[in-house]
Image 1: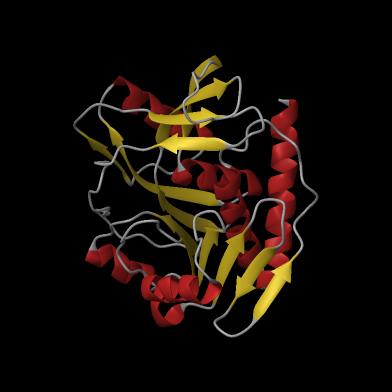
Image 2: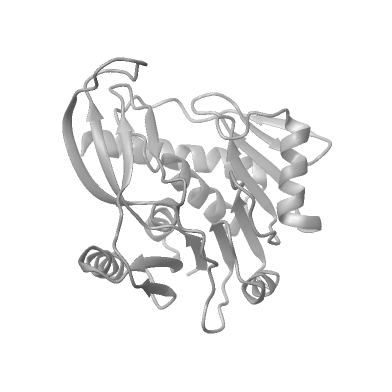
Length: 268
């Protein structure tokens, strides 16, 4: 069994199912409102668990009723939660507006958590995935000893970390490819082998600083809720690399796994 480390958020997503598309100046109506566990750490880790890896989760939860309930749910799902820090404070849900066609808008507070993630004990594994901004220096040094590291490309300034692959989407990285590559290099350092850009149902891009390879995604699956799909793609990509696939094959496999999940998600 592969041992993986996932560094990322576990949120309480409050999802507002809108009756129509977002339009400036219009009154919004919603047909449903529900709260679910979410966040990059949760969705990526869940995919890795389903594929058969063990997952040590590095994240923070609030030490209130909602946070303790989330910790219990993570334990029940099979996560190794020894590195989940319980912090004083109140859980604040992440507001997500979900349009009928599946497009979602995330309302994140401008003064969101910016604390530095750290671990209290030695952390080792076959691979690590990061979707986090601030990391303790000693934590970064330990990442250098892990054979395979994949990082999400942060949208805000973040602690540099050694990574073999950096993943982002065309939506989040609107610049030209060379500019995104430079951002990925600044984040991952000389260890960087490739930049992955996803684009929904369109071609995926793998770039190594000089060569661009386009990879066909799996056939699109029409669903009303795609929340978590991008994070699950990253988890499946990491798992495929661990299994010995080359990056192009790993991207195709990750797309297939994500499409299968969306198909199951639609029927559940």
